[in-house]
Structures are given as structure tokens and as C-alpha cells.
Length: 366
Ligand SMILES: *Cc1c(COP(=O)(O)O)cnc(C)c1O
Image (cartoon, rainbow, N blue to C red; front, side):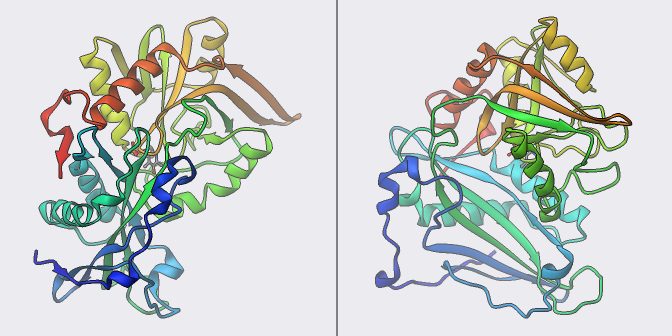
């Protein structure tokens, strides 16, 4: 794929002053000077690949994506090592997953090599935006949207794929701090046969109401239960979830409605390398409540690109019965658990180039 590099005026370049205060970067608040764009239509396939100035799109108000949500995205990070190298963590996994999301959402496939090439070229041009501090990184957001104009419900005949970059601060401002989650049977995230495995915008729009409920109960995120039994733990909505049960790192089995997280997959592989036992199976909310009370379930942590590993200190369970609502809670302690700390340290060391990755292809150097 030929990528045209459209020059931008020196005078239009944004200041990198924000990078001096990595703690105040937050997540997804700042964007670099350039973006990658490529178009698709039925006749030409992918064409007109460009790296150009980061700027607004012009869109007809009847553009399909704005009405029926035919949209997918990805999220990965570029890290800066101590000696200044820029490292991508398992980018090919994100590319493969984006193609799986595209398939589910009736959108076109991309060539894996072309997409990796586009990511590398854009990050290379914007490498000064990769923060230097450990914990901070350059977040990469591949996105694809349906751009045909019309109000008939159908797969679009035209698409736009783009990449934008956002320097982001450490996920935990106050350090590696445990969060609390709310499990409830009031709302569900995904159903068997639905789009829970696809990284598509509608899943997140549909989760906002439940997130508000979690906030009302003093929790940071929702711990989703399966839609059918409203009992088996699925994931957190932007993170997968794991428990330490009888010293085994245990995570819900990918059941068709759980997103296939790359952090989840990596932590399972890493745990095995470190000599820990792992298990992927059904885990009911009741097993966790009983097990935590009996001292069998000792840790809980979220797994996702944003936080890498997010220890959980408490799960609240809001259960609706004929007699009204019931609220229960179970605690894992205010400090991160030993296994969460171990895995977090190992993963960070690999991502920041301090340790050799356990598998060669985990790190792509730019
Ligand atoms: C992105 C995402 C995750 C985490 O996936 P990673 O590849 O580890 O970042 C988990 N659940 C949902 C719903 C997600 O969108």
C-alpha cells in the first residue's frame, strides 16, 4: 500500500508542552499533529492512503455511521524504553481482532501487513509524542466507519479507516490502586449471538446507563454477568476479569459474548511461564462471594490495555428479587494482591523494554 505523506506547515504544529506533565495528560484528551486515513469502496477496495494533518472530517448528516452505528475500533499502545526505543505491544493481535470485528459488523477486511505498516509509519512520524515516563504511553486508536450517505438500513458501500494517536498518562494517578465493581442483574452487556466479541461503538453506548448505576453505588465500573443466567461473570466492559481461586489464575472462558482481550491472553501466557496455574472456565458470582468469604478466592483484577492490570478491592452485587433489591458486598483488601503485583510488574517490564518478552513477537520495535 502506497501511503502519501501530506506535508504540514511548521506554524500549524501543536506544542508538546503537555508532555512535561504526564500526570495531567489523563486518557484520550490530547492528540498528535498527524493522522492516517484510507478509504474503501466496492469498486476500488482500499485506496487513497494518506498521513496528513489531524483535522475534522466533513460528513453529510445522513452518513450511515451516524444513524446505525456501523463502526469498529481498536486500542493499543506505544511505549518508550529507557534507551529511547519505541515499542509496540502485540500490534498484530489488535489487527487480527479488528478484522474479526469487521467481519461481524459486515465491514471490509484490511491487509494485516498494510495495517501494521500504517501504524508503524504514523508512530514513527509522531515519535516525539511518546511520553518518557514509565506508566505513560502513546495510545493508538484505529477506527473504521461507514461513510455511505443514506437512511436505508444496509451495510455501507463505502468506509473510512483512520488512525489517531493520543499521549496518555499513567492510568492510576495515585499509583497502582484497587478499584470497586458493581455486578447487577438489572442490565446486560452482550448476548449469545450478539456483538459482544466485536469492538464496536454500540456496546459502549449501551453500557453507559449501567455505569451510572455503578457510580451511584460508589463503584468505578460494572462487572457484567451473562445475559442468559444472570449469574456467570463475563467481563468489565473495557477490561476482562480474573480471580485467584485456590492459587489458580482463573478467568471466564470466552463464551461468545466476552471480548477477546489481548491483555487477558498475554497474562494467561505469562502466568504459565511464571509457573502459575491458570484456568478458563465458568465462574458464577455466587462462587466468588462464597469463595472470598471462605478465603479460597484471594484476589481479583481487571485486564485491559488501558490499565494493564487493575486490582479490585471490592465487588458489590445488586440483585433484584420479588421482595425488592438486595445489595451484598465482598472485599479483597485495600492493597493489590501478590499475584496482581507480580503480573503487573512483569508485563510493564516487558512493555517498557526492561525484560525480554517471553515470546519473540510480543514486541515490535519502531
Ligand atoms: C478492549 C476491551 C477489553 C480489553 O482488551 P485488551 O485487548 O486487553 O485491551 C475488554 N473488554 C472490552 C469490552 C473491550 O472493549
